[in-house]
Structure formats: C-alpha cells, structure tokens
Amino acid sequence: MEQTVQKPVFTKMADLTKDQVKAGQKNGEFYLIPATFRRSFAKKTSQEQTSIRLNVINPQMTQLVLKDGNDYLTPAVFHRILTEVGLPYKDEKGNDKNEWKRDVLCRFVKGSYTNRDDEYLSVEVIFKQGLYLVHFFTYDETQLINTLSAKGLFKFNFIDRPDKIEHKESSERFDF
Image 1 (cartoon, rainbow, N blue to C red):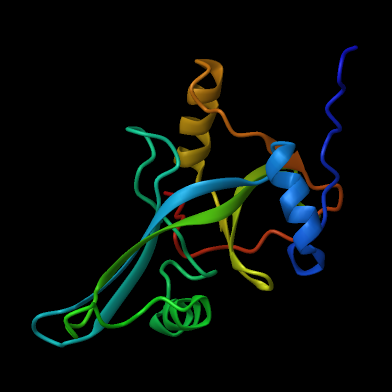
Image 2 (cartoon, rainbow, N blue to C red):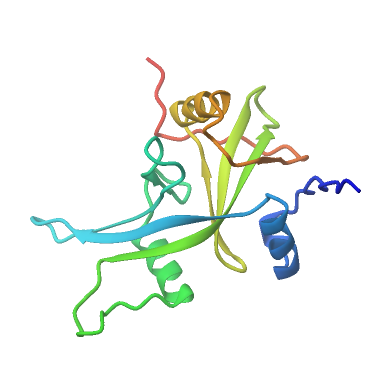
C-alpha cells in the first residue's frame, strides 16, 4: 500500500502550536538548521555588534545573516532571544561567552506581495514558541537558491503562503 504525504497547510507563525510544529518536522515543513549566535565589541567605540547566522547549505550558504527588519540584528533583539531561550552568558569557568551554537527550527516560505508583482522567498526561524525572526532572501540569495535547486542541491521545501503581504522598501537595496 502506497502512503501519501499530505502537503503542509500554511499557518502563521503566531498561530502555530507545538503539535503543528512536531507534525511539520515529519512532513518536510520544518527543519533543524545549525545557527551561530555571536556578539563582539568594536575596539574604538566599544559598541556591541550582534549576529545570528544560519548554516543553510554547505559550502554555498553557510553564513546567512538574519535581520530583524533592519539591515542588521539589533542587540536588544539578540539579547531577548538569548535570554528567553536560556543561553548562558558565562562559560563553566565563569568567563563571558561571545559565541553560542545551537540548532534552530526553520520553515522556508514562498509568497506574493499585495503592492508588487514580485514573489518572495523567506525563512522563518523559530527560537521558541512565539519568538521568531523572518528573513526575506535578497535578490542574490534567491538567485543562488534557484541555481542550487536546479542542480538538486537545495533540499528544503518552500511552503506556499496563501495570503499576500505588503512589500516594504529596505535601505539595503539601491537602484542605480
């Protein structure tokens, strides 16, 4: 008897339940992906710089830098994630930690905009229930994903988001 795999139904991140996530891990909707949480301080100004990087596919996309709607991840968002997830700020010897490695739950999403004719690709990263970031792939990241998919190297499924979202301009992209 042949088993049929049920196509995942899109549920907004805020509405996801633990049972839906568990089921999604089995049906190819959610994936555990290695992430590196890192903080450093500028030498001259002592300004804190924070990042969360996903190792999506080796070697082509090992440093996907997550953003929180800005062109970077703010220290406030970074520390909120660390604190709520319970990652320790000190190592076993009592020294300050500046790097953490942890697998994070991810879902790849494809959708459309209400105010543009473009389609987008994104990855939704869940740190714990109700705490997540959405990274919209840039043009170059999308082209890389398309190339890797055509060669059979990108193994993640994109879930279709049925409702359209509004496109917001980012200072990251300039047209010359």
